[in-house]
Image (cartoon, rainbow, N blue to C red; front, top):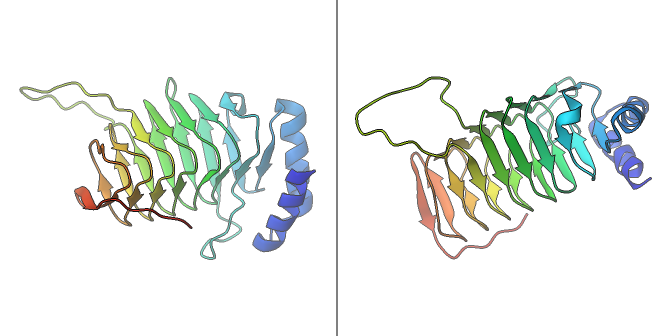
Length: 215
């Protein structure tokens, strides 16, 4: 009931058909036993590979610069594990390739037009939010050989209570610690170890220490 009350309110805000949303909710509940609130223009492939016992909202949020015709696409050939209530924004594109695992914590969200193309894995902590047009990419789609090359772990790790600004790109093997903020338009390549930092730039570096943040 709480899910449908939330859905009705969100439908009014985003000019989404409540009837179509309810029918979609019933479909995913009956066929897959999933508690999904899915916008009519969202498409999900391989639903069985999404694991969550809580509410997952897909394509419903509206930041004021999206259109109701924008399409959200999830293709989960690997595994998507969501620990708690979570929202995936309108226009997002998520491709989790076979053998890859994406783990997402509770009480966060991914805003509009964000893209994930994952061949290895991503870990995202609790209360972590991503603004619009972010990109997570953990593969090069090719092999580059050179003298002295060292094999690295390609998995992307993002901690708890992290705020990622708009248009941030995060690449393979990167780590963002707990309680950090990533400035808009930053390029993250590499492992950061200090918590409570403002990270930004291209290439990204620590700009401020001992920060705190809230929405």
